[in-house]
Length: 608
Image (cartoon, rainbow, N blue to C red; front, top):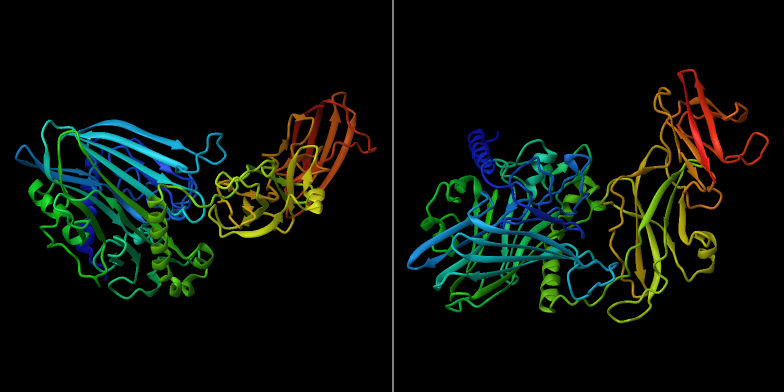
């Protein structure tokens, strides 16, 4: 049985907290959405979905794998965090102060200077390989005259694309010094956040508490993973979703300290690491319900009464604090952290319950991500390898033979690696998924510009396009595609060009003739289809299984009759040849569709 009382109490707490949000300014935000880990950065010091703990918000909150930007279903979201923020406390002019910037309450007692996203993509003319691809900067000054500059950095390149590095620069803008200052970073990391999405019920009650939290001292890494709840629900590990037969949270999520200025007493940093059972202590963790003195004691570690036992399954509140600092007037301190998620991939996740035995691999993978982030930070963000840029792709259904075309302009010509100056482009790789924007991906073709046969069969010299026709597909099934670039050293780009909306080779037949459409209309010189032989194709869609299409000139002369008879496909094509096999002239044409379920008519304009 669920502990109904605690569950109700927590929901009451959420409701009261959310009601407060309506009285406070809405934070401006920008999203890291380039790599495999997506995250929302707010202008008030908070991190995560635009409204913390808002179960209906689809903004990223340590989403892994992240995206797409618009989710077709709530079940597609894979959030590993309910929200995060920052706490600050110290002594100013002999008096204690404490400020709370999330993860429960937002604040407006500050001067917010806005938020800005800077893009440094490899396809940009001024690309700098020694800077992050995405940098989001938020600057504000608190009511205690502490200026906060937070810069977060993200990359899409494989090996560095599943973490986000966050730099904090805090400046004392008071006329006097601040002493005993601590910066705390509270996180609500909980892989079982998926419970509310996948199981129609939040895992936040005593019986269903199933996060295991641990601290890796060698990496200053706090992390959590989804384990069996306090009562026996073996299939809840990884949030198994029966209707999809897959695990939803296959990763370990955490954050680690990469750098902190030396404390005033030179103690090791972080100075305090605390993990608490939120269900038992939520009322103690906000200024709404507690004093500045009590929260400052939690921040600096003098009050560790909430510390959970290492083996507890909990709904976690995590806190990592740095300090104490004595900050003279107009001087600053710098602290850098990284947040990351890593674990088994979606292909393994789709093995369902049998994949649960692989979940512990996530710990090693997460630790590897943290190590990669630390190396990158200590190397001043200078990457050791960069893949060729990813081409922009066009994916179109080809109704003539119910195939799908993937085309793109070449980027191999003149490619020079910005790190070593070598012209080392090797190949394009085409991937397909019938599951989602994030895969799992199946590689279906490799195209090499150096291959004479590949250029002969797949490169359109007139259009200067690479074009591949995918015929190994099923009619009516939706497919996602992505194309990557790979160099001679095996360094491959990421899926940044993947489709947000899938493509079908052909649509199934319609039940009536109410929504018949013809495209392209008007027809201008070519169909837009990149394949040789498809230049003149015009398509009727949303046809019933049996129908007759008749095309007439403006003078009423019948040009073409097309008999459509297909129980699986609701589309028919015309190559602009008449029944006498003559090419039609430019002009206005009329068309009709007749069938047992209705009739339709329209006009068609040919511009050549």
